[in-house]
Length: 135
Image (cartoon, rainbow, N blue to C red; front, side, top):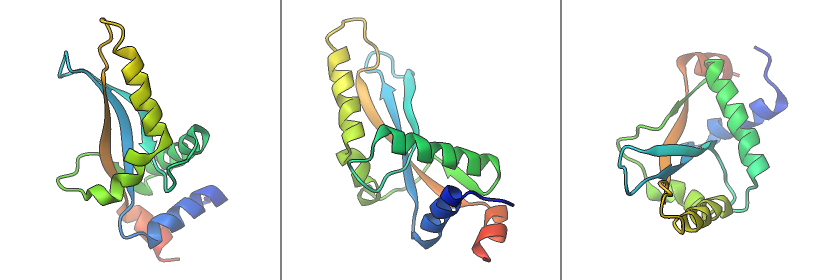
């Protein structure tokens, strides 16, 4: 399998990490509990100052690696450590999401009034371990 330099770099970061947490920024509704909307998917950052472009670029890499069967992305965690996700809560992008929902609350018809971080994790698939971890 031919991997790009960016894909190899991301996989190397995963390989040396104890856990590889990612999140999904969501918008939820206090008026309709069943309503939620994904604001930003597969958010991966190590720096609170990460830009939207950086996050979207990494998200695209994660999506491709998942489609190629190298990694698995899971957002249904039974247990997670808040410290693994603190960078996301402190990030400028999450602050922008919170500001956006506060602005929206001024409109009485605005439904998505709760910014939410859905915690997730990335792991290697059996195929990913076979082709990448052995090298």
